[in-house]
Length: 308
Image (cartoon, rainbow, N blue to C red; front, side):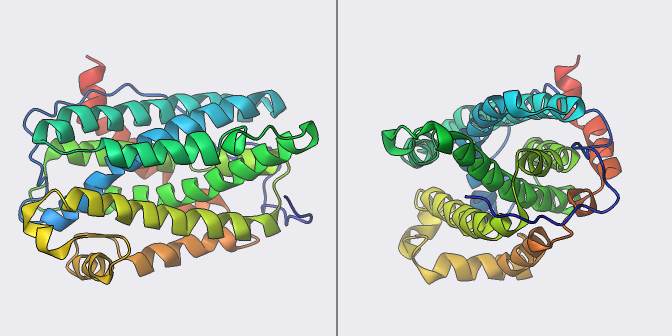
């Protein structure tokens, strides 16, 4: 599943390229005052970004299982430390967004189970150690592991791009609790942006493979995002006449209209920022600022609240 000849990362010699120790942070969010339309006057953008709460928990718990399975294969001490802290950060992300589903979305009467069940099936059946219950021959087990680690590396590039966006985006009068959730999570994605790619390379992932792995992961994530956003909008009477669906042009066109209005990142801009992952000289360190991420993490109200 992996092709030979990977160009070397420039000026890098160790398996780990995360310069600082990663820190797993506890956070605490109070959802009691957060309105469903958390960006005032922007129901589409509010629902569209709220879908992140539905999309992430199953995937991030799957990340944790996958990287625990990868740990015995990692021979570099620093990279092992990175991965262990990465797992703890991803687990906290999953728990925080899972709590937002229960304490925030359910509190506003939003049905989420039919959507999250689809996410669970994706990771527990299609991308499981035994996909569709099929036990793989021993010779293919590591290849299947590296294949899935490559998908995560592509996804982590996407989450770094989105992390940069939420750290720099200024939604006017947005609810501070949900904004803190997004920025805390986005900052940690920027902070640990090298780990997934480092592991993929360390375990034998090759450059040509990145093309088909990213070609699988990126359209799938965009499709799941829009599908989940449509599920939330169907429950809002203001959008009922639109019958939102991932298969209907309206939601995609409205996404771009909202992007032009400055409320969402545009699909085109996100796709353009994904292109660096295809470069032979791709270096995750170039994709964000660790200093910017750590500055927000030091100021995050949720992290401060949990640390009291």
